[in-house]
Length: 220
Length: 379
Image (cartoon, rainbow over all chains, first blue to last red; front, side):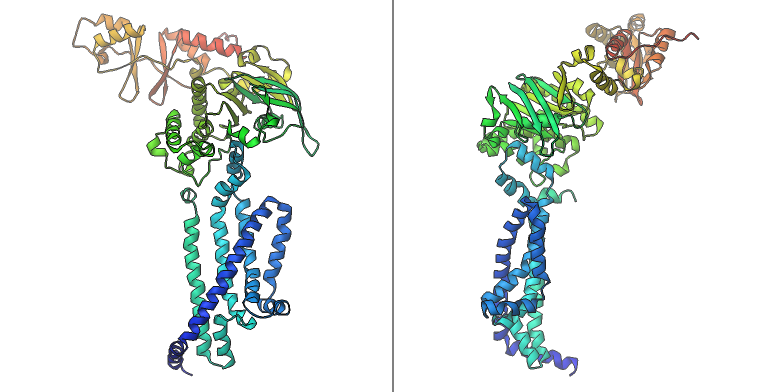
């Protein structure tokens, strides 16, 4: 196989299989997006909670870290006996993966907000909720967003394994390429996944910048 | 107005931070709590807005026990200024000042007006500073905003926890002066925690000296200096005030309001100025307050007839002294040269004038604080 040949083959594959690839891309996006949203909904409030109860912080973060260290393929496999195959299994596995970066960044972000701002707020008569919403969340938002970004890129990568629990996604294309020994098909699945991850990374980077309060940027 | 009755505080770890504090703070007075670290001054202050709850006793404001009041509501009626300033970095200066009025649901036009009024109060031009962010301001400016943020919602009471001690000396002096001025205008009850006796002496109506969770003496600055209750109080005032019993310098002895005149002016004008200021000499200065010399009434009268003469022609040079020139040196100059007065300069700029009477007044004031003039040595 020479390079030129492979390149032509790849283009042809993209053209012929575009419908399949497009469907897989949509599934991939769907799985990743839902998982990230669920992970945010769990991790951000949990992160705020453990920033208020610091004794619980270590155990919670440790549990999330353990999830993260389980090899991803094993985690998918492990869930099948309990949940069968399908989207639900994939989403749960992906969510579990996305928890740690968001949880840890939320905790770090909230606890590293300048204590003098909080003391001033409390002393002036802000309620705990007002301190959270007007001081702690805005000031830690860039750090939380950085966690979301890490989690998103990670999830888009791991979502290629969703194919093994029958949830589709770009993993389907890659797996088909591997089993039929067609490198161009593997690439036709891997490349969109990579572009997707990079694209999201960029978008979230911009969001992270937008989330940094103007007055905080001013000092740099 | 604020009353402490048998207030005590024991922390969870068993330390007794306060023992039986009884204290009455009058409406409109500026009371400073002062003492070495760990004496309980900050604990005492933070009990007033319930950031710390007492273990025993009762605190009331205007006769109403604060333990019956909602802490959030209570705090909104008490201004709070802290050493670390604590402006919210993500909000503009205007938003920071408007914080409490907003929580109190004032309407927007009233808040806007109030923000400008507050900024003007501390000499920060609203059109410039309203939309700035805290980190774009100097430390002194930030704490000015900290102070007006506490004043914005018109609380009758303001708590200040070492508000100026993190600032550079110049800003600190300025803010102290401004606070004294402000206090005269707004007549709030201010509880001010500090560890700096100079600061306390300068701003307080009354000073409470604390040690080991007790108030040792509560008195006006003057009475504290005259009648320190015990050795600790005496040392505490003394140590901080009269650093090593050093001799006073020109700054302690001079007047700052000096009648000056520019050298290009005519003699008639100098004469009129002396009459209106009731002085018999004027200090001649250049366009930027540079010290040029002195013109005396004698000289003006001597040359008065010649109407072409200007001040530059009759000027006398009296060698000026520096701000840190020590008293013995100044006394020697008066004895030797018999000048009417001696100008005080910083670099080449005029900053004050030592006259015989200003020197006497300065010495009398310092003697009260413990400075003893040494017997002159026979040379």
